[in-house]
Each structure stands twice: as C-alpha cells, then as structure tokens.
Length: 329
Image (cartoon, rainbow, N blue to C red; front, side, top):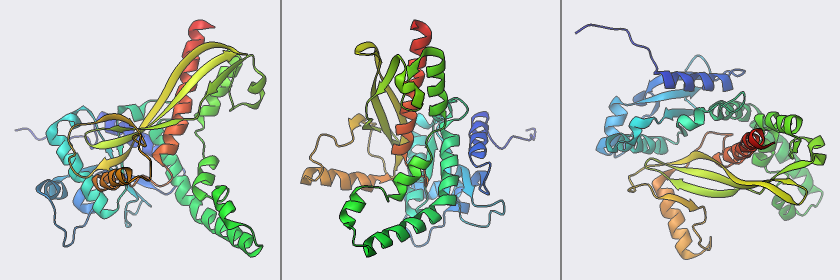
C-alpha cells in the first residue's frame, strides 16, 4: 500500500478555518485544527457510555479556539462542521456523544453547516461570530466593572433599583449587543436606498425615501434536529409606497443554539418557542426542565444564537428585498 501525504483539513474545513481566522484576525486567539478530544476533555471518576468512551479515545474536534499561540491554556470553545455525512444514524450517535462530553466539561460547542458559510456581503456568519467572541473577551470585563460601579452609585443616590434593572439600560448583554451590530446590514441598507430608493431604519436619510421596507419584530421559533436544536428568527416584511403594499414576504435565519446530549428520537420539526403553553404552568415547566436535561445549552461567549439570528434575519429581509427590486423596479 503506497504511503501518501495528506492535507490536515478538507476543502470545506479549510473554508471554516479561514472564516474563523478572519474573525479572530485582530486578536491573540488562535485556531487549532483536528484536536483530539482527549487533549481537550479530561474525565475523572465519571461514568461514560460506550459511545462517549469511543469519542474520548478516538475522536477529534474539527477546531479548538485557544487564547494564544502558545496553546498552553484551556480552549474557550470548540467547533464542529456538520456536513452531509452527519445525517447517518452512526454519525448522529457519535455527534450526540461528543455533545455530552462537552456538556460535562462545561465546554461551549459551535456546530456549523454549509448555510453558516454563505457569504453575506463581506462576511459570513462564522466570521461574525468569531469577531463578536473576540470583542466579548476583550471588552466584557471592563463593561461589567463600569456597569457595576454605575449601579452602586445609583443605589447610593436612592434610585429605585427595581425600575433600573427592568429598564435593561445596565444589562451588559444588551449593551454589548447594541455595540456590535451586524456590519453588513448597513452596507445593504445603503445599497437599497442608493439604487432603488428603498428606505430602512439603518440609514437615517432613508426615512424620507419614497419606498419603505417595513420589518416586524422577530418571532422566535425552535427547530428540532437529530443532533442539535436550532433557534429560528422569522420576520414578516413588506415594501410599501405610502399605504400601498408592493411586496410582502417572510425572512428567516437559523442557528444551532443547543446540542442534544442523548438521543431523543427523530427530529421534531419547527415549533413556537413557548409551544403554546403558559410559560409558568406546571406542564410547561416540566417540559422546560426535561428539555434542559437533554441539551447542552452553552454557546460561544458574545454570540447568543438569538442575537445572531435576529440580526441575520434582518440582513436576509433586505437581501430578499433587493432581489425583488432588481426584478420589479
């Protein structure tokens, strides 16, 4: 049998690697490919299933993200690309075992598909997630310190702290999200205005444009897959000229937000996030608790899937509007 030299990554994994590097480019964070699971996860006095033992001994993560090029610290998160081969029963079982090991270790796992590599102007969703992660690790300690100091000052001044908290003005997650919008939304909004006279909320002078793109608040749905559960942001959209509706459509974005730690059977399709229950009813709470037992809900810091899909669904709304405008205006 001939001995050959092989590349470290597949062509698709190379694209993922490139996008991760683009997002982390201005930071000290480093991307390590094909890292053995046993080099990342240590198991002590823990009962494992046969599948988990197999993954621990012979599996690898497509990528692990480390704080520096020295690779002498723990990774912040790991990345898996789920291509077509991940649809088989055997591979799904392996993926679930890997999810479970990450859950036990408290390790965030980012699972990606081909859709996450789709170019959105000058970025992909993967690159933006990496950008937000690097910004989160760089900015959040100071943001938390400053916010805590301001809250302490308000308390000393006798402010109604219940109202302060309810306002979300000092919610560090909200502040971070507002500070880091999806940059491409402004790019495509400007193009819609300049080429077609369609205004959006992203460009101030577009508010007086003859045509307006109106986008409703996003609806949160969940999509149950074999290995992961995805959050789906859906928006009702319309292009109007005054009161006249020229075009109506829906725009969506999805991202895997939690990963199954045990096989719960076939994928269950799309459901409203609340599943129609009173959120605090006994039936609903039992469902929530059971669901949390079945899922690893740790996501990449700074990249809450709900925030990501909310922003990308806006981009998709404007992109669909642009396609319609090219054909009809």
